[in-house]
Amino acid sequence: MLERTGVPTKENIESVTPLKERLSKGPVAIIECFQEIPCNPCYTSCKKGAIKELIDINDRPILDPEKCNGCGVCISNCPGLAIFVVDESYSETEALVKIPYEFVPLPKEGSFVTGLDREGKPVCRAKVEKVLNTKAQDRTPVVSLIVPKEFSMTVRFLSLNDHYSDNTIVCRCEEITLGEIREYIRRGYQSLEEIKRISRAGMGPCQGRTCSQLIMQELAAATGKRLSEIKMSAFRPPAVPIKLGQLLGGDDHE
Amino acid sequence: MNKTASVVIVGGGISGCAIAYTLAKKGVKDIVVIERDYLSSGATGRCGAGVRMQWGTEMNCRLAKYSIEFFERANEELEYEYDIEFKQGGYLIVASTEKEVNQFKKNIALQNSLGIPSRLLTPKEAKEIVPHMDETKIIAATFNPKDGHLNPFHTTQAYANAAVRLGVEIMKYATVTGIKVENGKVVGVQTDKGYISTPVVVNAAGGYSQLIAKMVGIDLPVYSERHQILVTEPVAPMQGPMFMSFSLNIYCQQTPHGSFIMGRGDANEPRDLRITSSWHFMEEMAKTCTELLPPLKELRVVRQWSGLYNISPDRQPIYGPVKEVEGFYLACGYSGHGFMFGPVTGVVMAEAILGETPTIPVHMLDKDRFERGELLLEPSVV
Image (cartoon, each protein chain N blue to C red):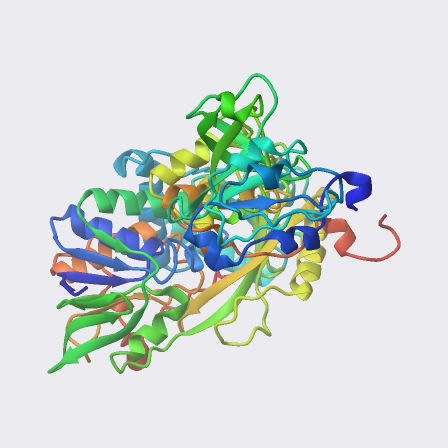
């Protein structure tokens, strides 16, 4: 619940998500401002007239995505850090997400960071495309992150800590690192089933519950495919490891 | 995209990859392997992956011995970048009936005459090799230290990588939809990724080999049958050999990784292409396993799956050309032992295709032996 957690609901987000066609056309502002507060710099800063005039200063801003060109001026002007710009035309499989970032140190352009969702949970690896920090941003720098397209409406913050570095253990059962997975992909093992068989990732007691998604993300990134195009591996019983002795039934077993 | 090949091999399991590698090593160019899914996605990658020389027919003994001697040097010969994980911990095959003991005595005499170092053991001697077994359930056992276990994915990949280095093309995720025959000769293979002109097609399609043979109008005397298997969590090494019983219906092996892989047959299994998993198997397997190897009851089952045995009337492979269609070759009907015969399959099939003198005479393993009534029935199968 927004009032308690500060995290907008799915319905909140849907209410400000532009149509697919608009998103695919190019950069557009996403105004995630869901509470009535006396505030209007977004409206006054927009040179395109894309944000509807606030009749009452408590009104929530309403964006006309057709007028918005995604220039991003409003990002730094929003005191609540509630405005982002999403550009799904960035590449075939990647999107650019522009985020207000008021922490130091700032991320370095070209470095890898971790994209976080609205709750601060790691979502994917992100590359810092640009850090905009001129007088115009007025100490609210704007960081542009390159993320897989499916996460364009999920990534809203970043952690400088690269959770998805080569040393990260991706399969905890078999202790396989992301670096190893990336090496298998480079050598031509380009499906989850093949990587599972060659590396054992996903064959452990957890049955790939942690690593499958992460490996699929790596496969998508490496092959230039969308995550939804990467095939899952077969699910096999039992759902939870069970002792051979328990399978016998009877009284003399716990 | 259409192309031309000298040989098209249908099936990217151990057989297909070994045949491709062996042909390429003998200098054959333009070999294409077609695999419907990923390499070793069929019976190869689903099998228990045990390899044994302890057979009941001279033919199977010789085929297996050749293969195991190849596995011993496969990492080097195939210049594999990883490891095929070959563990020669032996096979301990236990007997629970007098009839079985008599058969084992015959088997051992045969095996020893072929240079296979198997020997008959008392239950007490067997327990020394597998200390956690309940030796009261058996009356004798045989043991061959040369038998063992290896990783089927890595072994197939080792062959495939070596074949690709020699110029073989492997088409993964491609399905054969038809085989073109003109004037009694193979002329090409139709796939969903294009047509390939070729004078030679090798049917190494494992559990689906009867479907491939149908494409040239041949009814193979084989059928496919699901066999189920499970794997446990890994634990510290405690069992050296494969533990096996024909009469009690079990094979159980600890892999170098530490997990136990075990399976059994089911006499009521229908003859079709299903590869689902059943609860019934889990219960039966748990019962058999914990009776014979009681401490294993503490192990957790992590996963179960199944694969297809391609079963021939005498439980031995079908190798070689067919009289009906020139250029059509069979490498199928392994009856559950195709993985361990992989290396020898590669060699005898390459020799058959090139018209060379066979390393092991396998002409009696042709398809027509069943019509002639010359079956070589293998008595030692789970």
